[in-house]
Image (cartoon, rainbow, N blue to C red; front, side):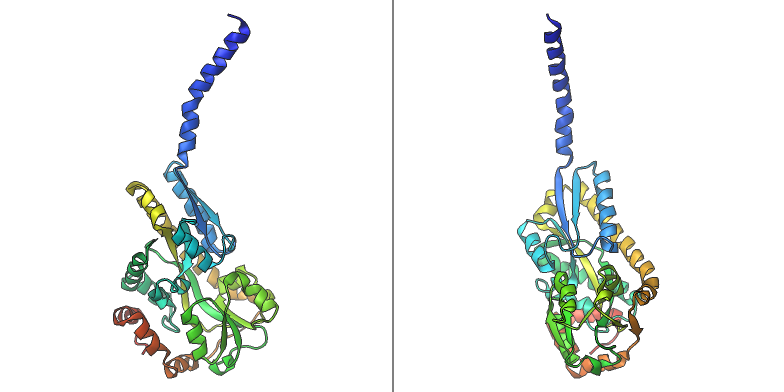
Length: 336
């Protein structure tokens, strides 16, 4: 046998030996899942979701590979929800207040002035109210993880004046997310709310389609809203959280052991993200002030009274039902 022929046989044998390794490598990424969110890459949600994906990939030996798409790369919240339900997207970080277009009760945590502090929030959302909301989400055909992620208490920012009491909101053109609860609340305040997707908010403020918006400080900081807004009024008018959703078929494709690994790490990431937000909140006001924002603390009582007088609480109690409302008031105290 010639040397050339012998080398050819050796190469062929080597290729044969290598084949199983190649096949194993191809099978390693058994589940390639896309995860969509509107937050930018410097937001704690993205940071912890990325770490979560790495831990899941490591513990599943590469079988579950989750790719994060931040900053509305796959569309706005409602666009991604349609993709999730249709199967084009496997995972989504979805604000409960916007998920309400599919599951009305998912916005209950955003009722105006319901929660005085974080202790009340976690008592409700890690307790009976959160359990109830997740049950309703599941009935709508999507899978939801146990722990809600923190977006924070929301504040009102404006380009033209500070908000000192509810009367300053009268006829104010303010951007609100695409959610009936938000529109209802700001109409009760006498404002002129306009529903605009998150991805279009900065440009809407820049071009004065609207003069105000409302978001947690962490969002105002990470999305540079301070570049197009001058005043920040610390209303704490509502709390907002994110539910981590799975397409049902994508979740059911995972074996029970893989589901357990994914659930463990998603819920731990939620706890870690909450801790990140808590740390950031301590210094965000000073950071935003250094960038030119002017802060004030409004009279909260005037806002709450306006909601009561407008029948806001009565309306939403009827919308959510007696059971859900009773669970909310266990943590918030009497609202209506």
